[in-house]
Length: 157
Image (cartoon, rainbow, N blue to C red; front, top):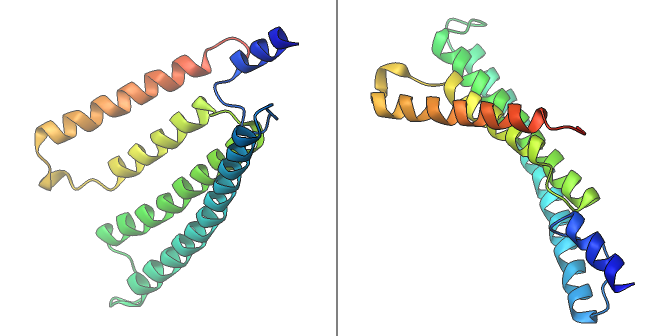
């Protein structure tokens, strides 16, 4: 029986849903799971808030003269707002998957990071950036891309 528990615990780094013999640890696991549920509820509130922000930004940009037209900078502001919502949704998916499976889905976390850095790249003002900053962002994009590729190429996925 003890060997089976050890084998199961080595499959994942964290088993918050698994009952343990120690009542204190069992209670602490329950508290952490409730905290994760609170995070999920708060993330839904953030998503709704950011959707309202997208609507507000779009309304403001379209109601400014010239009416119903977006200039180049306005389009980037709207894109940034949309992408913020998508990133929030990805974070919510990460939270709910963690709550369900009790394990961090590395591929999804990397995909979320890629989406966040892509958002940054899309809304960059190249005229106001130092070359080293742009180089650093390029390195981060490359590192995340290679990492995502390596995780995706793993057998069994």
